Amino acid sequence: MGMMRAGAHLGTTGIWRKASRFWSDRRGIAAVEFALIMPILLIMYLVTMEASQAIETSKKVSRIGSMVADLVTQQPTADQATLKAIMEIGSVTLQPYTRSKPKITITAIQVPTDITRPLQVKWSRQLIDGRDGAGPTTTTVPPKLLVADTFLIRVDSILTYKTVLGLGLGSTFNNLSMSETYYLRPRRSATIPCTNC
Image (cartoon, rainbow, N blue to C red; front, side, top):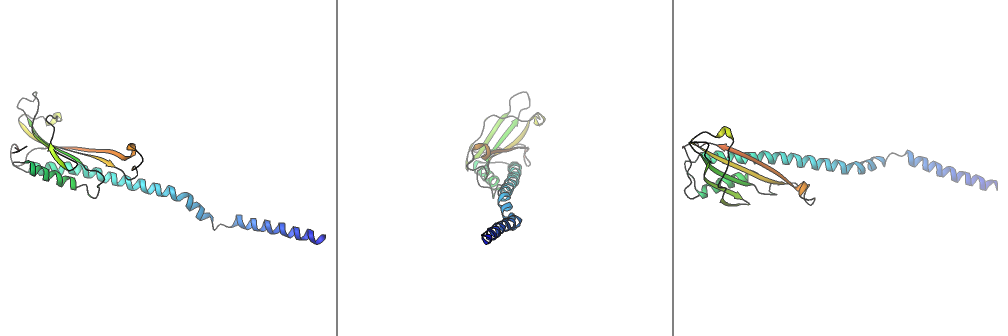
């Protein structure tokens, strides 16, 4: 009978010893912590990557406007084919971003001698989803650019930025609007006529 008690005591002591070793063993804690923290780190990485790509794409949208306006204002005359080629060059600036295409609009504006009169849109072309066509027939310009009897080229570049993280999460996270407007005056002539616009 005494031996049975001793055996039972040794068994209980062994269980406590094993439990004590289990709780004091730190080898598995790092793996558990990693499993808990990894999703948070992954989300932070993806958000940082997406934010940096969105900022870079926004800069490229601005670059489209300035580059297209600069190329157009260097032409003494223009035509549909030339303007389409210039807008396509502008859209390539977005590479390697390819999830959506920009809308680029070039508008030639004649400011009348009497600046109280409406502005005249001499011609306008735009590129939407890779297809070119006629642009708007009316426009406005900032008051500081309203100089009597002058000619302006206005370039609007608009992009609906589609995020990688937002794909499948709805339009709130998926569509960020980026846009830029540039005005430049002709470089080589007083006006830039378009032969078939």
